[in-house]
Image (tube, rainbow, N blue to C red):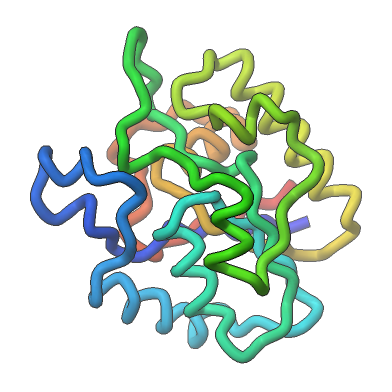
Length: 191
């Protein structure tokens, strides 16, 4: 199985650092929307494809613009929600990384479905500040769920820290913030 981890397009939370990080669940910028639309050329989707998406506006907008006109499965899941990397002790989730509530997701993105596999606690808190042990447990659950789908490739729209955490777990290589993907940057990992 090939996993394609794709970072969301440019979000408003990156425009006026550090104060913009305190904007709750910011959307994509115009540039971010253009970046998301260009994913159609790099990764043309079909009705057979599955896209897992982090439950934040910027990731869901990226997936919506990329998949526009294609009736593929678009599944929102906290298994790919924001992840602090590297994990810093005594840190809290910033407003820009607070997940949307399920009801709001379905209202704003009616063509998306919600993943019913994650535990309720993960839907409430995500794993932004979870211990490495808890992240590993959740990540392994997600990877096992993906494997059960019996797909050759699965797409995942997520965040730089989350993608890097998954890459580190899957490859066993020590990574740093220098390994973060750029906006709509991607990594393919064989599992």
